[in-house]
Length: 428
Image (cartoon, rainbow, N blue to C red):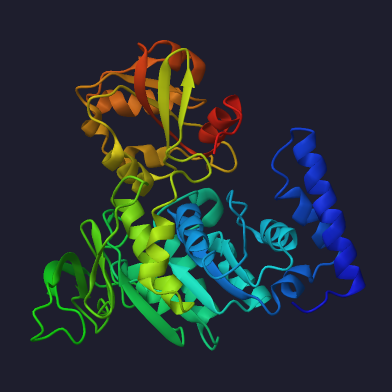
């Protein structure tokens, strides 16, 4: 690594000190305040810290933190990796992450969708992962078509390699100006934000198709099938041919070989995240047979999927921040267990809770449902309309205490989730 200028070294050191003090006083993990202090002293610090590193940026509406963790785990096979493991995904968090591992030759940074163009310019990252775009915090981020357009502009003319989900039309449109793209069929269970062509505004046709990996014709290779093909009815914009395909519990690589994932992380969404991670690892020169064992070691990510215990009650924590995220959470619920739902509407969540009406909660019928959080009445009304019986609780602690000893699933949005983690000592 190139030696930092003296001013940058001082800014980095003071930022690390601020982060340490934040952790010591219980104010947080220090990943944001440390970066803010550093950037006040040296506004160009992110560019300087990123120089000479092999960097991957990971951006999406859902799955950024998990995919960042999976890629990081894989690349640790090659050497030390700097990363923002706990989701501080704006420039201050990136500065903290790179500063904390200043000699790491590799970096994997989760990036907020809105900040991606700025971070691409600042870091000059050579690899960028784009996975999905759907409505989230509309009062802050704005229309997702505008985000995709910003991605297009940011990638145009850059010497970057993009790994992109070909099944999401908005992601495909956003990534299509990049100099080099590896297309991955990672799926798109939530389609309600992409029925129209982002290129011309016309309707998108969707249909199933059979996928035959390149070079496998006549070899007896087992093709995967996908229900994710799409094409515009009014212009030439259509789904590109993927070179990596998520096929149920396995990934088919560009050579047609099928790799069973066998992850400890549950659910289809995490298998999609793993497909992106494996494609990214190969861009860094790490083959699947070396990357996949690393992915199988990951059991939880920043508290997600962790089970916490109190008085004989074992609560598994699931994060859901938007309609697409709730669909993913429902996919991993145990139908035999009660479930606690907790929703806030603070700044990091977005103040507007109208998105609750886009979630189909009828899947929760037939099991005990408990509702907590600052906006529990908003959620209660939505459940009532969906015909889902529930019980209101004044707090998460009350909802948990109402359960019989045994297992319970918990779905919470961002700040509600973090509050629960703090209550249990920020279990990871």
